[in-house]
Image 1 (cartoon, rainbow, N blue to C red):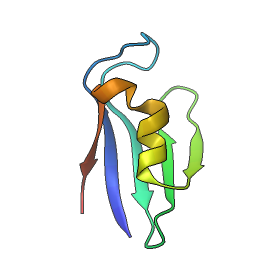
Image 2 (tube, one colour; image 1 turned 90 degrees about the vertical axis):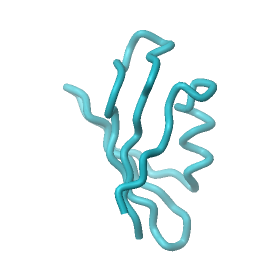
Image 3 (cartoon, rainbow, N blue to C red; image 1 turned 120 degrees about the vertical axis):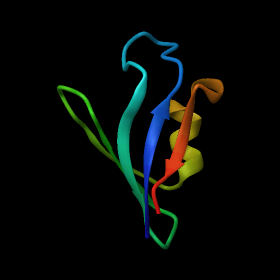
Length: 68
């Protein structure tokens, strides 16, 4: 298991802001959970890191920063 931050370098949509927008954990089986850092926070379960980036990557404007 390893933790990460979702960092948005450019807010293309104008909705979520820039910087550290979510916290996450990747489990040993590849599944991932994210917790969004917003006034109305949301917890999401994903099949993989690639799926998160496919939805929230915004063409490279968002990146994964591994903590451990």
